[in-house]
Amino acid sequence: MKKILMVTSEAIPFAKTGGLADVVTALSVQLKAMGQDVRILMPRYYHIDRNSLKQVDGALGIWLGKGEEWTAVYEGSLPGVDVPVYFLEHERFYGRDGIYGHRADQGFEDNAARYSLLSRGAFQLCRMLHWIPDVLHCHDWPSAPACYLLKKEEQYRGFDKTKSVLTIHNLGYQGIFSLDDAVYLQPETDMLNLSTLEFAGALNFLKSGIITADKITTVSPTYAEEIKRPEFGFGMDGLLNYRKADLSGILNGIDYSEWDPEKDEYIKPDNFSEKRISGKNNVKKRLQQEMGLHVKQSTPLIGIVTRLVDQKGIRELFEPGTGAVYSICKDMNVQFVILGSGDAWCEAELTTLSKKLPNLSVTIGYNNRLAHMIEAGCDFFLMPSRYEPCGLNQIYSLSYGTLPIVRNTGGLADTVENYNQETGSGTGFVFDDLRPDVLYNVVRWVIETWESRKEHIRNMRKRAMRKRFSWENSAGDYLKIYEG
Image (cartoon, rainbow, N blue to C red; front, top):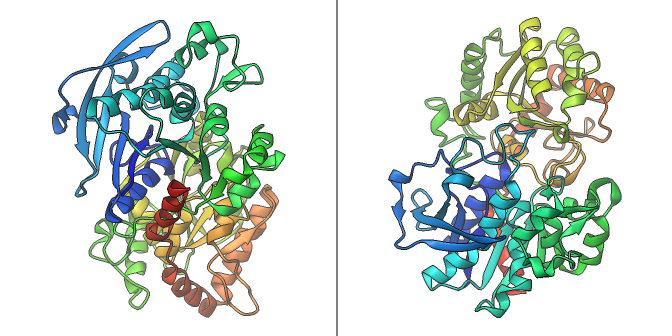
């Protein structure tokens, strides 16, 4: 049995901005089911109700820069599972709305201090619990410095048998701050030796983890190869090639207890399965009604649930004057339902488009019930990502027989098999170039297939719903990494 501490900025159902939150929770649940002693540490953000948690006796004193910060620790657990979740409470750092910032495109100015506290707090928590992990599993830039601290300091202070694993969920977000903030991670006396922390004249949290973690993983095999190339490496490709012997790609799974059309609470009473798919038409009708779209089964319905950021291909889809969606909606017999939030320009443009186009419905924000309805009720799901480390929505879509339309990159390439119009094989529609004209043409291809090759669509749906990307396989791969 391995003792594993997950150090993370997000975990559902407590805090979520993207797939990281789903992965940390699902992986922890599966590792627990496989007999591991796994625990989670994360901040107690303002919106997490401490009345539902139990305060751990005592306080943690955490050295941060020039002085000690005192924090409380609360304990909860993942719903229905005996996986402890520890919440680090610090009112000045975490007692505010937002996780990384008030908006997706603007981070808090003190994020370097906020997440240095999390990384340093991991070791103090373990001391408080008299529980030293075999594996410190850190996720993305917010906890990457814990790998650095383990290698530089803590292995000499009781953590000599602890190994670190850094999972890169998205290399595009690295935690870049002023070099002055390096004081939070190392003593002032050592400020001249910044090579592990500095990149391009700035403090880089993710780089500190890439250099010092014992093992590095990404969330799909294709993405593990892509990030070793300059076009996907965000400046880290040289380091990742240097660490390639310790770099692995493990495809994310999904939680089929939540994303299963036969059991999904959000689509009752119209649950359906591969062998009894009629309920899908009922969910589509309900979704069209709810979103103010014309109710018509013969009109293909395309769903998008996304963060509205450049990585997701939003400029090619929605940019005023050039984006493909306006022309698609004007020229083709199709409907779109969109759920997302992010860059202010895109939110504003989508709001404008929804008023101009009767076949496009937009909801700004995130709504879990609506996300399930979109996955279940749509005919197709569009993910034209510039890059995609793994992606979860295309896997959810497969489970619901909602055929993905995806770009040939990262985890999208690892999970979706391109449609062959001669044989009818495949589980979705895959394209290479990310340009508005390509998006226009691929949607036209999808609609032509919908209208003229209905048997192919039916068979692809069944084939997609039989696919399984379980956490059991992925967690087994992580255990092999931990053993290494």
